Length: 543
Image (tube, rainbow, N blue to C red; front, side, top):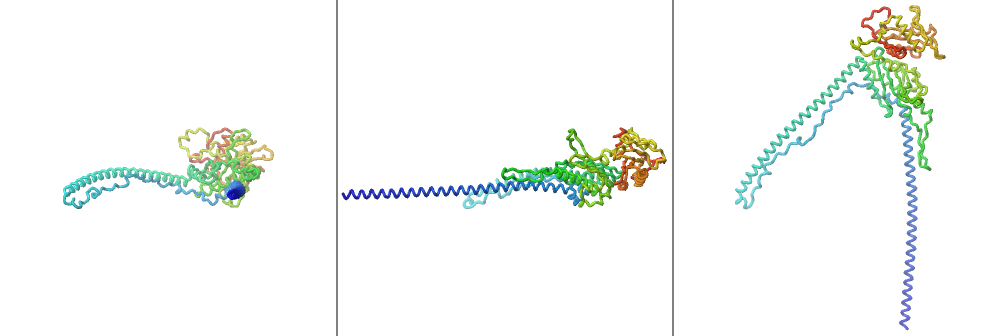
C-alpha cells in the first residue's frame, strides 16, 4: 500500500514537471514568434526607410542631371553671345617666327649594344688556395688547376674582346644612322624655315598670293565652337588694297532648340521647354552679325604691315532650299568698310546688329529664314587679272582689252551693259555732259529713278576727287543714284566718302564680272607699259 502511494506521488510529480516543461516550451515558442515578428517588423521598417532613401537619391540624381542639361544650354547661349567679345583680347597678328618648326630630332633607340659587357675576372677562373693536407700532397694538382683556369680565362678574354669589337661596330653603325637622321631633320627644319622667310619677304612686298595665304592662316587660327563650319574664300586686290572674304555661316541649328529642361517626378520623365521662335531668330541674327564683325576685326588687327585698306565681307550660308530641294547659297550679311571707319568702333560695347547698320552693311531681315541680301561685291567678281601674267599668256589671250577702246566705244560699252542689266540707259554727247557719260533710268517703282553714270579708264587708283565730282553731279542732275565705273580700283578715302551716300563704286574686277554675267563679253584690262594717250584719264597717284 505504501509502495503504491509512493508510485502515484512520483507519477504526479513527473506529470507536473512535464507540464511545467511543456508550458516553458510553449512560452519560449511564443517568445520566439514575438521576436521573429519584431525582427520582421524592423526589417520591413528598415526596407521602407531604405526604399524611401533610394527613391530620394534617385530623384535628386535625376534633378541634378536635368539641372546640368539646363546649365549646358545656358552656357551654350552665353558662348554664342560672346563670339565677338571673346576674340577682342586675342592678338590676331601672325608671328612668322612662330611658323618656324624646330628640328624634330630622332630619339636615341635604346638597345643592348649601348651597355658594355663586363670583362671576365681572373679570380673567377682560378681554384681556391689549398688547405690542410692538400698543401703537401696536392700541390701538383693545384698547379694544373691554375694552368687550366688561366687557359679558360684567356679564352674568355678572347671571346669578350670579339664581342666588344662586334658591339662597338654595331654601336658605330647605329650612331651613324642616328646622326644621318638628325642631319636630315635639321635640313628639313632649315628648309621649312627658309620657306617661312621667303613667305615673309613675299608678304612684306605685298605679293597677292602671300597676302592671301597670310590672312587665310589668320582666319584658320581663330577659335570658334566646334560645330561652326569655319570655311571661307579670300581674295586680295593690290591695286585698291582691298580684301574680299566670303565666309560661311553656321545654320540656325547652332542655337539650342530647348530653353530649359524639367524633371517630372510623377512620370519619371524629362520635359523640354522649347525656345521661342522669336528668340531663336534673334540669337541667330546676333551670331551671324558677331561673326561678320569678328572676321573683319581679325583681318585688320593682323595686318600690321597695312596691306589692307578696305575689306568686303560677304557672309553666306550653304544650305538647301526647302521649297525646291536644290542647293543654295544666300548672302545674309554684306559689308564694305575701311580701316579708319572700322577702327573708330568700340567693339566691346557695340550691339552687333546695330553696329552693322552703322557701317551701312546689308543685313538680312531674317537670317534664320534665309532672307538674302545682294552682296556689295560678288566674290567671283575678283578677276585673276590682278595676278601677273607671263608674256606668252598675254600673247595668247584673245579677249578684247578695254584699255584699247576709244572713249566713245568705252562709254557705249558701259551704256549697253547697264541696258542689259535692266536700266533704260542712254549715252550722253561728248563734252556736253557736265561730267556725265551715261544717263539711265531705273524703272522700278519706289526704288527707281534717274541714275547718272561716269566711266573712267584709269590705270592707277581712282582718287577721291572723282567720287566727290560724281556726288556733285548727282545733286546737280537731281538723280537718285550715281555710279562710277573704273578700269582700276578705289582707295580707302573713296569708300569713306561714298559711305551712306547713293553712290555705287564699280572697279575693274566688278566691271569684268558684270560684262561676262550680263553681256556675255569676255574682256581684259591691260594698260600698256607706257601710256601717253591724252584722251584718257590716268588716275591720281600710284596704285
